[in-house]
Image (cartoon, rainbow, N blue to C red; front, side, top):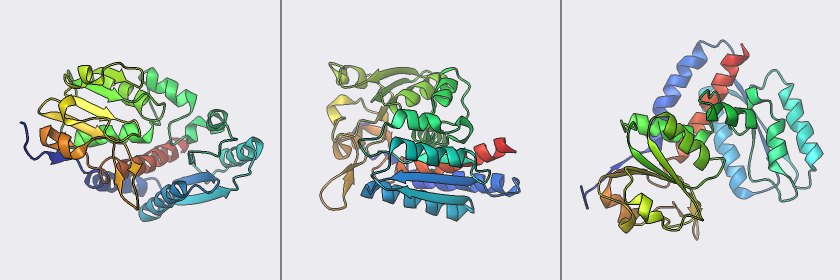
Length: 282
């Protein structure tokens, strides 16, 4: 299975199927799930991401609020906003858009969010539940990747899986979810001396580093499944992933494109988490 056209795992298709299921759940709920997104500062990419999330809520009929705080906001001011949303019965999910301005410390702010409303899955309590194998609200990107793999019938049990990247947002929870699916998982990172020693033996590779061409053709075996989480902006409006797509894709059985692969699923899983939080609220 070398140098042949792979099947592209398109997130838009999976997200559309998931949204159809969410509409059914919404119809039986009896009220609109509520999502509040808090953005601090004027990062252009964050503004775009927030707008995408609000539009997705509108598309499904969810209630949504976008709160934009100035870049000069203090730690206390952001905390007060989050606490007010914790107490708001119309809001079932709260998302603090990252990155924050440099003077703010994101970890204590993320911990302020009520774990029952933590639709990003970043609160330490939700992280602990995932580690214990009792997850409720999962980090959206890793959960979305699992949905993509299910949709394209990737049987994970017994697979040799490699996750490149160890962030709390993607790498670590991704490894835990794959372990829970009975894959054998290696987590690689910037201190791993020879990535290819692991990747050449892998059946599944998830790359989440934020750097172009981390994975190249000579690092993968024929028939591998590759998930590219990266979103690197080039000159103009062009974006590329962490995988050298043109060289790696011909060696793959399945691969996610960038854009159009993992990205749409992150928002779809945010909506799923918001619905789950609303269902738990009842």
